[in-house]
Image 1 (tube, helix red, strand yellow):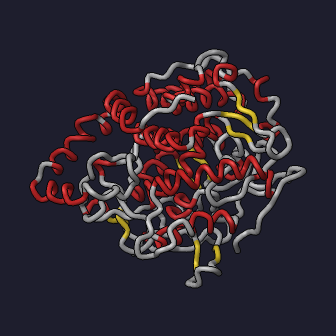
Image 2 (cartoon, one colour):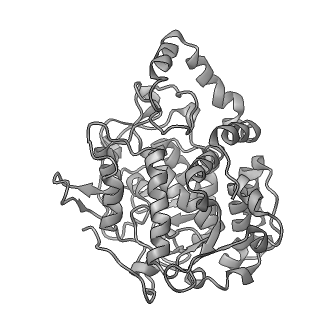
Image 3 (cartoon, rainbow, N blue to C red):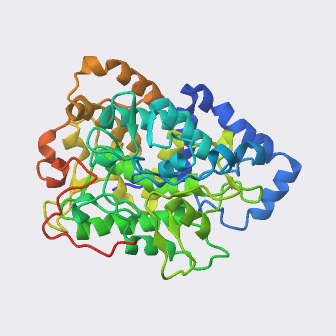
Length: 436
């Protein structure tokens, strides 16, 4: 597969795609950074850092450190935002960030929220831009909610916990593959320690994009080797499963004046992943107890994590893990993974090269075609919501997919196992210990 450098494509993509959103206009995105960069104090800081790898990982965005403003970036975990563990009936699911938002009342504490509440909470807690938050929130309501909102756990057509292979996906950083373990909600011990031990020195630990893309490659192949029903599809694979990795650093890294891009150390990682204990070899997991750490600072408002930013991170991962841009599946046994050509599944709308150049276009257009099949709703009933989705992704100028070649997916038994949070364990699945 042809590979692409992040520096060239990211700059071009950001330059050509941001302008359609007023809040994400190129001037609004870049001018504050330029202004800071030419400030004498800031220039001195940048020059002092030029000999060192940036906190986010060599070659990853941002090319110029964003500004830091403690007042606007501070995320409170006190008062009305103090940590309150979930009680009976409160939904907590696979996504640690959403769980933390609910535990601190940025999202409703019961774990069920409207589209707008998801948009507002992800921006308030992490600095997710409204275009990305809007797309993810709306898609969740469409395919796994009641068109107005959805649960951060729930069962089929109720929330993300029951959305296997249409929103939730296998090959998670820390959680279990549905048909490997019979659940998509267990935290797997070996997966956690594989990530955690990649930064052995607590004084210098930083789980940045370089660390995470290496870990992403391991998890991709681990699912192939251990999950007979592993399916890696355009939306759930290329888009959602990448988000599970990139979001860890992009949203959980703690920003500061010294490191405005953010540093994700061991204690902050454990806090957001609900990992407790002081004995490094005997840590334990408290399901649903994810929390914001003390003195946490999110992304700067001029550096919010947008759809173009996310696309750049996918391409950054693909520089060393090009497999993440190809779709495919195991055929009912471990190590039987075969790729599916993008042109075949999209009936010629995208070649493999076009899908690799514009992975979010390929993934989002595939998702739009699948929504009527997933929901059982007609195109006319979905039209108002589709119009909103098209507005959110319109700046990408994506080629539409007229229809999906469903027969190309018949070789993927895992594709038909929609559901969760529990499901059948595939024959031949290989399991590892669970962290409790």
